[in-house]
Length: 277
Image 1: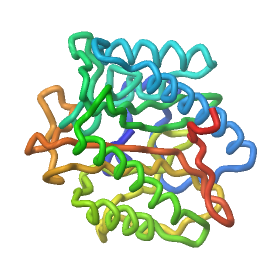
Image 2: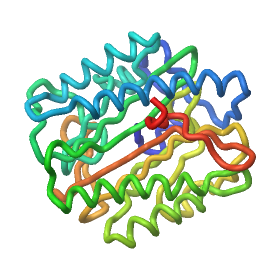
Image 3: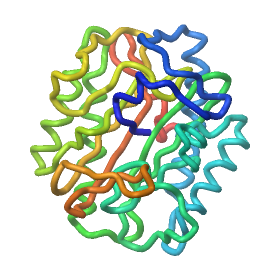
């Protein structure tokens, strides 16, 4: 789940019991905590893989939300997003020009050719997993297919830079350069984040070059939600009247992928890897 960076420093109100108040500092996970996070991340990966295999035109985003909540709970976890800062769903479902934080709705139908972003999280035994995929619904346009492909590549370009001793700017530069080489813009208003006992922890994992956020040096045991967003047109977004859904200002398409990633001594481990499910 993307979120504005300054949410990290704001107190959380009216959250479900599983969401703790944000705290300053970066939490280095112990081996025992990492093992729990592997399980919460596996739940998220499982749900997203299942959704990607069953999405079809005519379904609503509320259908997907109900399925995700049911499956998360069946696997012994709780939906991380539901109630978080008042968000009403277990997933964020954002279509086409919707960038992030789309609210599931029984009147929002999924159509052939749509670019559908599904983001979800699971809280299991005290720790969160968080991941997002973009789904091509049926036959999409060549332009949409390229955007989705490059968005996923962009995430992996950032992940490939993850290792102890690297810096967040290393990730951001790799992601921004890949996106821009293909003519796309990185959305800068939203960032990735640390993830663990809290859904959003420090550090803010920025996706493009910036000097306004700390350029943190990575250490083993850090767990990061890396989640670049690519727009086909302008990088700028606006928030709709529901106070959650962000859309592109020019109605251009947007795509996003996210993984929860563990920093290791020699590299990384993708905790929300769907290929192992």
